[in-house]
Amino acid sequence: QTVSQGWKYFSGNFYYFSRVPKTWYSAQQFCRSRNSHLTSVTSVSEQEFLYRMAGGLTHWIGLTKAGSEGHWYWVDDTPFDKVQSMRFWIPGEPNNARNNEHCVNIKASSLQSWNDASCDNTFLFICKRPYIPSEP
Ligand code: 2F8
Ligand code: CA
Image 1 (tube, rainbow, N blue to C red):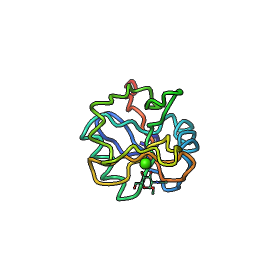
Image 2 (image 1 turned 90 degrees about the vertical axis):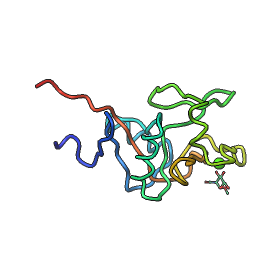
Image 3 (image 1 turned 90 degrees about the horizontal axis):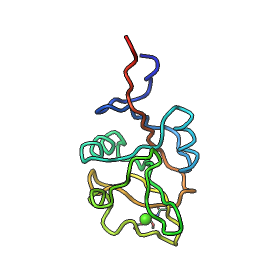
Image 4 (image 1 turned 180 degrees about the vertical axis):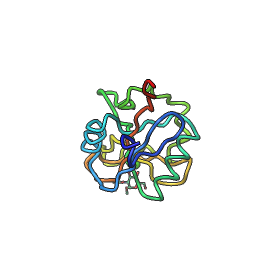
């Protein structure tokens, strides 16, 4: 399957783990150029899969802030579930350090994993696109 080279399948989606660090926005542009978005995380099993595949290295995910209120949203348009997502933040995060942390990465242990960081920092990143079976 040439179309899926370098992409890992998990539970209905393909994921791309970059080998080159980018800013959050450049990472999202890269994902979009590959028919995908920076990944959303909507379950414990997905979080554990991503953390395991990330191999201990910090990776951008598709969570960022919008509006003057600065509410979190997923760039792939998955609704952000604030309550269900609490468990995924590193204790003490998001802390919006220096008032300049509007993008999120997977950083620490497998479950309490997310940190908000400056979108201008460069990290590895994870793209996600749905697996859409083609007609036979
Ligand atoms: O201690 C948590 C804190 O660690 C760093 O700041 C010192 C992170 N900064 C970056 O990753 C740029 C903070 O986001 C994090 O909250
Ligand atoms: Ca932070």
